[in-house]
Image (cartoon, rainbow, N blue to C red; front, side, top):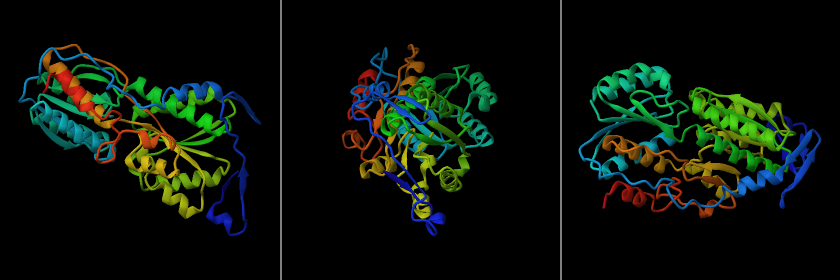
Amino acid sequence: MRKLVTASVAASLATVVALTLTGCGSGGSSDSASGSADTSAAQTYLDEHLANPTTIGIDAPLSRKPDAGKVVVGLNSGIPSAQVLADYWKKGAEDLGWTYKEINSGATPAEQQKAMESAIQLSPNGILTTGIPVSTIQTQLDDAQRKGIWVNTSASSDAPVGAMFDTSIAGTEQLKEWGKMIAADVVVKSGGAAKIAQFNLPAFPILGEFDKSFTASIKQWCNGCEVSENPQQAEDIGTNTPAAVVSALQQAPNTNWLVFSLAELNTGVDSALAAAGISNINIGGLSALPANYEALKQGTQNAWTAYPLPIVAYRQIDSMARKFNGDPGVQALLPTQVATPDNVDNLVFDSAGNYIAIADFEKQFHTLWKVS
């Protein structure tokens, strides 16, 4: 039995609404008032994505150790996940004897364009970005190409073009996988009775791939489940989004899942729910941050995709090294898994609490890079 009580209603009513959620311990199909759910198929898919990965996902060594002395610039938007990525861009670059420089890219197109222009003015060998659409910085990419500067991005739904030579890392296929992973967990844990409020960031097109895959997979496995979308702006994170979540739950009190298309959107939500007297809502989504893993350990959140940002960063450095060497590029999905209260204690983290998936991932990259 779950109970959701808002502060405004609690003053006059002891309980607003109670919902009974059925479990699905052994799989199978379940029926709900509005449809049916193939929880067995969802469980099968989920089971494939719970265990710890064992390799970085690529095994082709470079033809030779990359030349030292290269200069790469990272564009860091400043949000927590971007900062982790930037920290490991720096570490990976230094592992190869390169110089790493950093510029704050902000979150608006104008800021991103200015950041690219500033990066190009430093005359680096390469520029590293994440999540910035090619169309936003096309003019700057043309300039980079003229000057022989290579650009690499993670978290992009665009195809590589010109100076932007690699967009495959944490790209469209990866986001589709993550959307399906979270959908599987939601269907299984709700027993095919999920009423989901999804909070997303349309300003970042790559996140839309997660959204589409999540919704399509929910429909595939559970035609009685419901998904409502609640678009947010980047500047809403930690400011307007917590209130928007509370409002959405007050307007639809039968909601039993909150799914965030980026973990940063969850910032401030837990305290806002507590202040509003709303409890026992299942929470999960894309790319857990250390706070989300801690919430999983406490049993207050339910399912997040484990995003190995340090490995993403090293994959981007690896991609740059292959480009500088003239070696063929590599494309592969990242080592990842669904993080839940049941497996979170077995996940692998660095000393700062960032998910790294594989304890010796740096050693595995060094072997490919021919670095002792």
